[in-house]
Image (tube, rainbow, N blue to C red):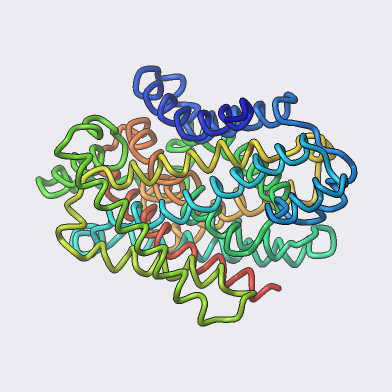
Length: 421
């Protein structure tokens, strides 16, 4: 195996596992987050000259493709239009493309299997109100931002769809919508880079003074701690954050079964997509996968499989490190101020609007904070923020909002993108 290919495969498959291990050992890595670490490593690997440099002839033949089909590569090699180095780089691009597409598609069902819709309806009805307000706030700011920046951001309809995804379900939804809409790697990385920059600022605010600030305009949390919530809290912390015991036989064997089911769901979704026009097949695949994932969450034997959420997040990390390795930093040097402002407007504008609407409906400060964190930063951050707020009761609400966002974010993001297009 080519050394460069080995490095890529090793980093994509094994480095996320190493980061997960270190995240459990060192608080600083946990605070930074596995997603951010994987993006950082991917960017470094992709931009230090580790991969072969391609010729101008290869670049011209590549055009807007991610890689050239292998049968064509043989023809171009035989005719002397490209070099062996070009062919090696093309193989790396093929692997990068596969490692960005399939882990995301396989992760979505695994994440959705962990849903417990009946329990949410019974024990966390207030979460749906906060979820609805959060979604409305995001959509309002998306449309305002689109109207302001539609003349200065290329493919802003794609950006809008991804922003709906990132602010309803985090990285998994944004990545899925990227695949569904055919977003370029540079646009995806640039948008996500700005989002993570603002996200870091937002997290510092939430973990420090947000509770005191929000209580100026919102009521304090009214504790209704009971044994049901207590049980739900403990289960959620174990099921959505901890990787402990994932390699034990009693856990890993059912996980293999859940992974196999995800493969079947992907295959069936692909088959269904063939019934539709080619330009919307990717979107159909994502929507079918989401629907099947939700449906199987109602099957008790599937729902009882432990660590499906964690396995899904591991696949997300594979995607993160690979997609970052595809980004050419030299193309990102020139800051797109319009895109930067658009992302900032959606993040902070939607949260500000969320607070204003919550005041009208008298929703407490802690619920608004945890809902915003679940939507903006994704469910894995919920226990961390709940701990900072010294309110463990809101973990259930945060998980309800966050995972419901996973479920509906793909529908919303794709629908908004095509509507704006």
